[in-house]
Length: 633
Image (cartoon, rainbow, N blue to C red; front, side):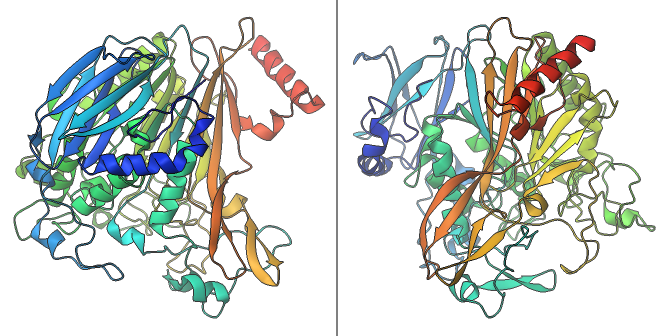
């Protein structure tokens, strides 16, 4: 399927083959357009008949949106917009006074003026490429997009899930601690964290009482190159289950996010739609109150969520007070249900437990994913959109109804929310555990019976910042639900949680449903290359999950095939540890699942190595075995 180039520009790209040759020209053109756009046009709410467009300017002048069909130079749709000043996006005194070591004071700041423009276009044709342009103050931004296919006429859908980008200006100079994981058999040891050439090049820091190496890429560089890989894959949409920015109430974090996604660094969101979810960082005011109230009276969680809601306009969910917190998008045969895992009731905190669970002891999921603020505090600050996620709540009832409806319509269903319910990572234990972070995702396990009942293909989360896959089959029928932590967008590169407070303590291994993690199953392989210790494969890196949904030929035993590919961006270094480039690599845990004609998963997911052997004997036997199993069911 042909997809237009992912970067908005002042000229159209006529053919995919020209994309690489024209890359430098496109980058320059996009920069020229950016002069009049604080945030380039970005896409939301994709469907078979329409798309929503949002952009921000730094003055109140009106803008004109034009839509073009095919090769026509005459627009089929024209709409003028008046900018709507978003006062909540102005810089605070604390942000203006902030200093960041390694950066010139204020070099990351723009103006205080944030004028929002929004256009909703309906009545379009399914699976069709359109061009559009936005003119503002004599500057023209051009890009293109493709509508979703119809439910009945489709061949493939490709999307990416990525979490925990946590953008901020500090990311330009900050390299994160690189938690040590497993080593591959026969590998050299990692370079020393205090006396090696790697340490001299990239530094080190203390993590849980132990000195560890820093990663080779800065957060900013890692995120940029991660997005470059995504933009090269001609995706249909990007799902981001939370922690987009390093503080929802921190405006420089949002500026950095849009510079990468709809700005001068990259503009992929001008070509494909974003489906975001609220994470714990979106509920955090950063310099402006944190989880409390700042000197100017801002309640950090509300300030952060107000900014989020200024940028993102989701479909209605039937509860106006909860608008934008949870929502559903249908993209042809695919349904994505986005939940808000920010607040559970009754409220909970570690101090409520005088007797703590220890080790792998599990007393139940608990009721709350955070102990930082309460709904009462949030509503006292004027907020209405903080929704309980527990059974019987408005959000729960809505989710149940959407799952049932999607299944009745034969949709292939994915669910996303931030707090991973099943995790071996930092946030994998409940509130009553001795080692709790106070932000564990276990309360979201309550949704599993619904997910299994309605045949959800996969649940996409983040939070623990370690690539991990879990599989849960509560009723033991061989068909369960696959869960992912895809939290390696551009921030931390964590490892498994330890059974103690030191990195030297053994792994806790709290998640009995874990099937694979980059930390333990993608061992680092270090070798001497030209006499220099180099990582040649494996390890934890910035990356994402690519999801390919393919319709199978008529007459096949299955309706569709879903392939879930864990992708990482591998840094290539010279003999002096200078960055040569990065390349897209795939972890050896690609999973393939088959979808029945009702849209539900009909087999246990298997590693793709058993399914993708072409005409090889094992590949043929594997397919035959699955068909026999179905026939006997």
